[in-house]
Length: 268
Image 1 (cartoon, rainbow, N blue to C red):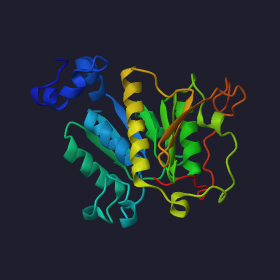
Image 2 (cartoon, rainbow, N blue to C red):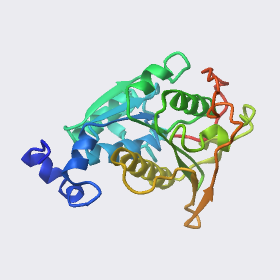
Image 3 (tube, one colour):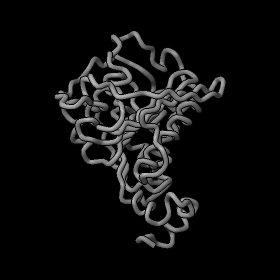
């Protein structure tokens, strides 16, 4: 069945019976690649569910090491991997879950100098970063490379998710055209984060990436999903492309730049 062996048929049996997946869709997932930028609170559940679903190649981008303060929400890591590079700890966890998956650890910070090389090698990108500098850079790179981007953020008990399809849907700069000055937006180290919020939002990101790869359902394109776990409410906001967007408007000249590093939005 579409080149799946007996063990793979058993492993993915609950997906194979879904009409939106089947053998053809599972083969597509096994042949696909997703870049997860940030191996923390959002990147952990996103990468874990992508690996469980059989996405064949997963790239992890993160320059940090595992710290004990991460373990309250970053489920790729454990007490046994404290002090280890997050991309190595994450790769170890993903391969233990599913040896079908090839995990490519990139122990670097996303910069203007390396962003295009990293993004261009993957089919879909999951944004799980902890600062606005990287968030805007990754958006601009995905628009430039025409790569679908699953955008999300979490803080305290709240989260947001949207799916960006370059050339068709609003990009991150359409939603937030002005970069907040450094220090004006608190991060999770200052404001806090409930670990389960990151888990929920990261799982939604994985679902969005899988739908994009399969061409199934209705991704959160042109829609911003707002999650409030404290009151357990979900709200959807329709968003439109900005015809004057500095990045995704027709004919825009995109120049990748590194913004201020301390322009924090949320913790991974």
